[in-house]
Length: 196
Ligand code: F6P
Image (cartoon, rainbow, N blue to C red; front, side):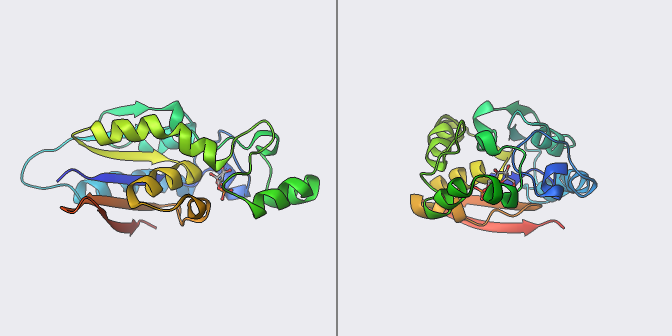
């Protein structure tokens, strides 16, 4: 059976400092995840015959670095880049609350529809990943999508039928390989493998 795996990038230097957005490289912990990922994925593949997995990343360094050691063909999608936090890019949530209290409150109130000034909302991201989802549906091979928290919430929600309102708060932890397997009834079953 064809599978879809989802993984956030390994911990980045920005993650370590609590900063959102940016285009930083992996931290040492993140680097360790990138080295653990191939073994974990290959252990989940059928062992009888050689199988290939299509590896899709965003165009940001942290996903490309995370996929680096996977011995499979890779494809970069701009549509998988993380939510654009606009004027808040590169800040901590505390800094946003201090500097733009109204923005902070507005996002808390309606995280799905809130759009960062000069940036994106979850609704924007959900729309933006649509072409990726269409290709994911079309693809016959198994695919590993290495992307980002907000973007993966949108991809996951599509396959798991999560109502839009719940998407922005879905749990999407770092260093966890999520495996989605199509069931005969058309739904997907899910398994999570924490690799820390
Ligand atoms: O903190 C990592 C990160 O990927 C940020 O780059 C991004 O802004 C954020 O997560 C998205 O999560 P949330 O919508 O919960 O702020």
